[in-house]
Length: 226
Image (cartoon, rainbow, N blue to C red; front, side, top):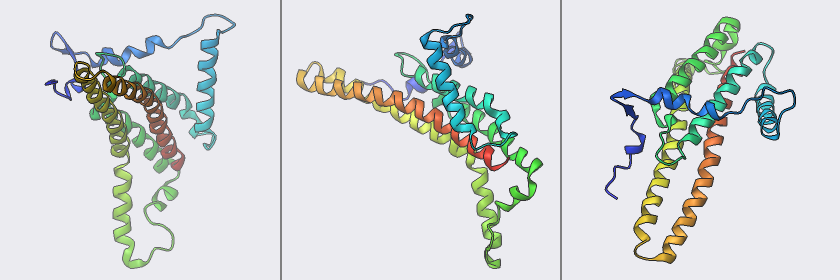
């Protein structure tokens, strides 16, 4: 019970060297691939989910925006697998690190914005000043829109970090409560353990939903700039 709640969020090391890179490369090993002409049910279901997700995200894009489809599909698979990795016992979740999420969000956001300024500079600049704005409010609105544009990658990273971290902390607290009550009151332990199971199922859903939300918002930023 005296264990630090945030101990599981500390980046692990092996012989003093950071092991985060090895952990990040670990989940893709479990993604099945096929070398045969006829796929099994697992790979068929996997391909169907990828096509469905790609279709939902790419429908609103033009030809130029659809060139990002492979990157966005890879992104959602990567985030989903790393989120689910943290639900395993004694594991580490890379997406609880704000630095890592910023490292994903900033380049993608910057690439979309730079593409917008290169291909549609008039439309990109028009976002800073809505049509029909009163003259006295122009300087203030330009500042507000600039700030809102610059905080987009921070919002992406913080949203993912906060949701994954909060769920893991809640599971940690309920797990400790289950162990503490196991020697005091068995019926209460069973109730808390049932809540823990339901929370675990909820966390699986949150891990997948947050991966989809992160990728969808990147897709929307791309749509606004292509």
